[in-house]
Image 1 (cartoon, rainbow, N blue to C red):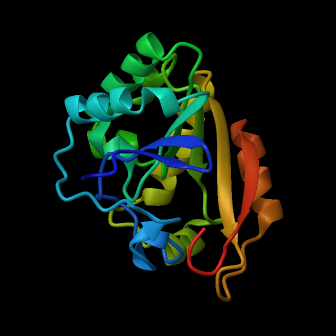
Image 2: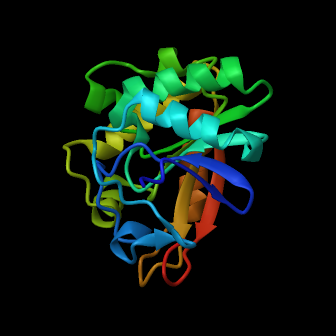
Length: 205
């Protein structure tokens, strides 16, 4: 069975797709098949809202507090399902906060500004900054689209503009990559978001 709705350390996550616009060097999906025992590879990339709804209801007793869109792929690549699911959660899981972990390419990939549609449904968003400049970002993130760094920064600005609580993150400690966290924090502050440093761990993070 596909692990669409899954749980790690008491927290609830939703896994919508295997697809991603990045091929980040530190990504756990290229290191092993699971995250803490949860196999997140989907046998189909055609997960529907009904599929998600079914697993949410089957696990209703386990769900409390925060629900995060995060899996092996980029959740915004299945934006229609994401939005329907977020709306369903707000209407049927009262009091639950909805988070989104993203690489920030959603507006480019969907050929429209998706942020206004998320406002009021997505409470918090975490965007992978990954580096203080485009060259380092491209080296680490291996984007499969052009101008990926610029698209990510524009997306972050839109999130802040639309009142979504926004955090931008970098991963440090992976091989010999040197991330200038001070510069990254300045970029984040100028956008109006919060900054987070994540330490890479052997076997994924």
